[in-house]
Amino acid sequence: MQDLIVQKYGGSSVANVERIKRVASRIIETKEKGKKVVVVVSAMGDTTDDLIELAKKINDHPPSREMDMLLATGEQVSISLLAMAIQATGHDVVSLTGAQCGIVTSNVHKRARINDIHTHRIEKELAAGKIVIVAGFQGINENKDITTLGRGGSDTSAVAVAAALKAELCEIYTDVDGVYTADPRIVEDASKIDEISYEEVLEMASTGAKVLHPRSVEMAEKFKVPLVVRSSYNHNEGTIIKEEVIMEKVLVRGVSLDENIAKISIFEVPDQPGIAFRLFSALAKANIHVDMIVQNVNRTSVNDISFTIDVDELQEAVSVAQKFAFEVNAQKVEYDQGVAKLSVIGTGIVANAEIASKFFEALFELGINIQTISTSEIKISCLIDKERGKEAMVHIHKKFDM
Image 1 (spheres, rainbow, N blue to C red):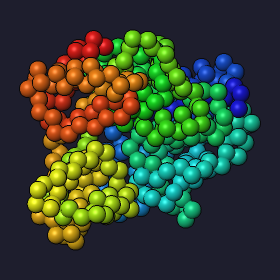
Image 2: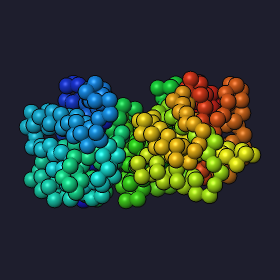
Image 3: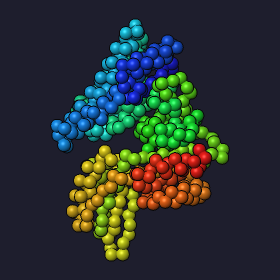
Image 4: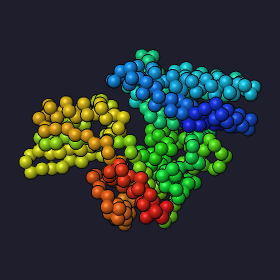
């Protein structure tokens, strides 16, 4: 749809009345430039965390369906208040929940995936000249139950809406000016990247960079949605994310740190065909995403298997691992939340042996032990002590002169 802009505002951008009014002004500016505007909004500030804490005071193991019912209310508060702020200026506006705007998801609670978006309600409101405010992070499944998309799901909501409406641009507004070579809150001399490829920013997001949710980047690349990341606090140029960015002589584009992970280890697993399949298929059935995997081969016909998962899924993952260990007669299951994943990202990075050498040399200089290593075409990641994570990130950023 020509002349349509989809804008997404995160929780910090709408954390209080003053910020909501500022976001309302920004949306109106876009509208007054002759654009149709659909806005996707997250819950205010720390609302989601507060609701999770409240639920756990009621029930140590709250049902996933009821958690979705609870957490979806956070976005309903922010969309209604933002709509009120816009309406107070005399502009026509309507707020819609995920269900009302036709976001249909899978049946998995807390980590649902978007299957389809029926856009007729949004198109009807846009045709009437209204600004449309959509609740991010949520949808509705085939049973008409409310579902949520997981942490960072509002980014995915925004890109999905932009793709469904064939918007000319999707703008992701956050509390930083764009995508940086490292988290500027940790690395003071981090530089803003003007242009970056979908592939590179996907690896950065997947390895801990907090600017975009990985699934939103996957969707943007799949449907060729033009993306711009910029700050909601100023009018500076942001970072353009597109198909391909040619950067001669620049191999390492960024360094990222993911502290929101945990490592699970299963000791003395029988060394038999199909054992790994049995474990990881059980985790997949529980919708637990596994990242780094290491299997240590012993000489006594048993193996030790370690893998990392999102810390939010730790309790469920440990339960699956313990059940598996009991069934195959493994010795024990241990978990460790004191780990972090440190990564360097850049197109063609693995093809250049000097990058890996320099990366590991930097950790050696700090006396930091590497627990696990994984690579892809455009990244090298390692598991290290969480307490040393930020220190290592700063040192590696300087080492590669980013």
